[in-house]
Length: 298
Length: 298
Image (tube, rainbow over all chains, first blue to last red):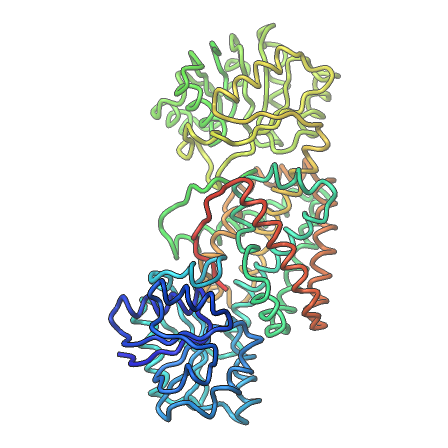
């Protein structure tokens, strides 16, 4: 049971964790911290938090568990603000989509990785932001990846693991670099493709018509382009190396496809599409046995 | 009221039209034609068709309306088989995702575009194929684009328009080339990105882990990579020119994004993401006022 949970950044991620832990009876008190008093008021009105402050140092004082759920670009400043006021037995974790930058920020502020910091990443979310979008079931059967380092305290790690499990998540551990590579492939690159496609179409002369005649498949495909631009700017800056590598790999694949199309290499195209369909069908069977009927345009 | 509808290719598209027209009481008899007797038997058992044959010439004999719902690569052979046996007052339309190639195939077979041919494209579908996936509501509130040419008979055009309207669709007309450019942008390129992404990840060493840790956003983004490989091979071959142009445009956008990421140009990244999000939100508001909560990974 967490006595006092401080959530720095009460949005979709932080708000949903608070709601889940409350629903599970696993937290006594939730302190919300953020820059927008309007959002904090809303979080209070929605029953997501019990108290709030705009000062991270005030929020974490007396907290036994702290979640940093702010854009990656804000992590370092938060570390600077909370480092000296944490309770001796406090545990801090974060929800950043890149782990290398969080670890680097912590080392920059504290000279070494503090034993009380458990870098983490819940693989969950929607394209919507803010506490109004939060809901207690967000983490149910979702994966949370923790990337502890040798310096990480074993008890701190166990407490963070237990917290996410109480929220319904399946927790696994992974090396920091491996996490960042994996997420570059499965999340960061796909977001770049969606943002890039929508932006490219927006800049075409006939963009109004283009969007008018787009159908359900386009809506699904571009859903992630409705994600928070600041968060994604920070992810790109924080995971530039792994993401650049994925741009290169994907660029090679696209060049191959484009030249097959230009050269009319029907067999090669069929190979690629067949292999991709098989992998995608296998993967979907793995994570969701129910087939979906969401409309797709051809 | 259609007396006898011949559907060449009783899959998702053809089967759903038959079901919709039956439900609306707008067709008396449906003849199904395809290469797989198993699929035709299933279509019969499901009540989608009244009779079936594997011979297109037999199927269209005595039909007053014919729908060609086969992969684009099969269109020309069908034209060759049905041209001489059509009823004098028969109307033929198709559901191909590229219109230039269908028109070219018809001209190759008949020397000029027949007045009874109304090239068309229902902007609807799912990633699933086959008559088992068909359902009567597939076209409800979906767009169908017809691309008549000067040679097209006005009555034939009106009858095809009425048929799709009876199935619940919103019918509009467009120039052939414009249709193919529009679809290259909103459907063909997105399918290439989804197929290409899944294939690129499949070919990475750690592909099992990659798919294991992918979340809901990835599932949505790659849904269209589960589409029929043969159909998409044919679309690429048929719309190579417009699609190649879109590859170039998208490639420029990706190069721009990649160099912004490598150079740490945070402002430029934020501009792109903000513009894309605004367009996508506006577009979604336009086609579906309900917000979606389908999970997306970050």
